[in-house]
Length: 366
Image (cartoon, rainbow, N blue to C red):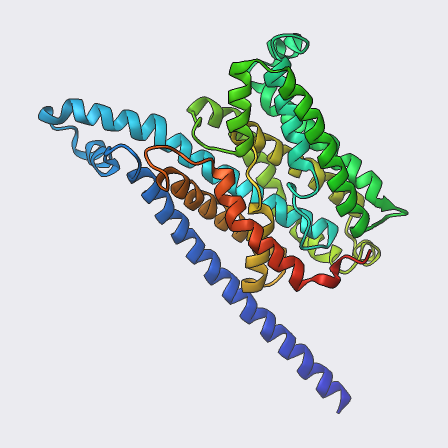
């Protein structure tokens, strides 16, 4: 009788898992359609009346001679302005959301986020150092690395902060959530203070660029930036799905994950380097865009559960979609001017973060 009840419980658990898997696949499919729709709307809307539909028509049937000038203008706007902006938005949104999900799985806490615990601040410090000191003290580095100097500096800053945070929060193989959050706040404050010193040293042109850069924006998207940071983000994101099994096991505790055959330390190192690379590259070209990494994974956990096999790809899709929507709001809410996208994500994300904090009051035991 007991064996039958155990078998029945196992069967019900497998059925529930199957139902959750079906739901997760359905949500991922819907997110693919939503992202495709957002990409199309982003390419077809903007301050200019350029028609992406006309550009697509010209691909297949050629431009009408009477509309040659108009077609050339449309191609310039769609190809050189909107397409790199949309592609950069997709890459950065996916990177921030997936990195948030990975860090929450790594620290086993839904409040972990690259922006909250100082990774974004460290990446920003590295990028600001190159912008301000690239022509003086760091001139040899800038000359040697060329266009790679900015993303590599941002990556180095994010990696340094992440390693420091992990070293502080981990003792005897166990990571303290309270220590992580408090250390992240302190490190973020220090990085922002050093960034303030560099801003004080900047000239007027650099100061204006840095002011808008810190607020976050996709306005400066170009194909050069996409080609510079795109491979870094794609490579980092490509490695993340291979961490899903380890992150699932890590939810049971590091000791249990080790007994299940998960190389815990190697998993941590790969996650740390991948997050630092993706966040550093994103911050280097877009500036500070917050709350994507904490809002997206939490929403998806409520919808499809905590299984990282589905959570990570779904986070990439929803993160890209949300950033494109935020960019659309930033471009239209004060048209013809453009609101920094970091303001939009903060206004939408901060209340949601407070709700998460209140909903999980007991998650940080101080």
